[in-house]
Length: 222
Image (cartoon, rainbow, N blue to C red; front, side, top):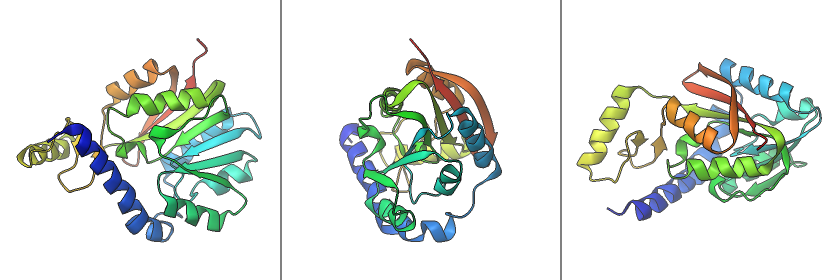
């Protein structure tokens, strides 16, 4: 199976699934709860951003974190690959600006003081990671901040997923979880650190909690 075509199909599947299944029930099941580790690292990120600064909530979903951002006086722009998620966000926050665009197609230049990308990178292919991080770097002002999360899963689960994918003759890279028909990718910490360094980000802090690794980084001045 051609991996390029397979990636296109899996990306479309994720987008359709989000629109049809998750957008309608997201707020009811997941929209009100913020885990302790997510809240902790988000607050650290916001403390480092300029007061009243501009933030990009990349893959913002229904605007789960916006009450925190708005209460602290930040200007927020939200993007997401799901039109239905954005419609839900705008229904709750009609004053907010949003844009229907995937992480792979972000085109901002020197626009934001900080970028947050929470619980979304697990749907990105390894080929897209350097592209997306470069988009983030380009979108930030000098010394801008980036907070992103990376989902964690056991090695045993990854081994089972990889073996199942091979039996189905899927063009998998180890760490990808796709035998169930959808798509997720779980890079290890070492790989994430390499990608961050290659795209002008200095790691300020990393924390594990609530099945995620949380990375707080800053754009380097080169």
